[in-house]
Image (cartoon, rainbow, N blue to C red; front, side, top):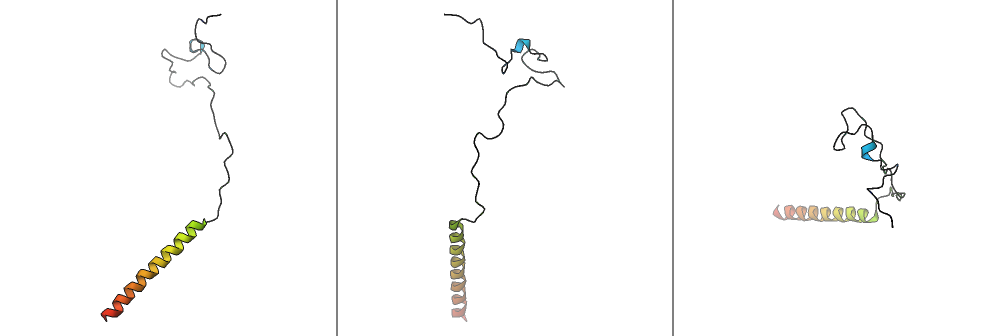
Length: 84
């Protein structure tokens, strides 16, 4: 069995002691560019295309609201006619 004397560093995770430009504590001097680090960009999987159509439930909701408004208008007209 072998023992490691410290953490193992590779190219994607450089040894901070040997990285130029780092100050004590791991910071960088003003105007200095930090060391290159691996990053993840973009999506891991393609997203499904969204539909540009209006959903049927939205159409049903609008029709229901129109009917409700018409009922309130009819009730208001009936009340005004009774008062006259």
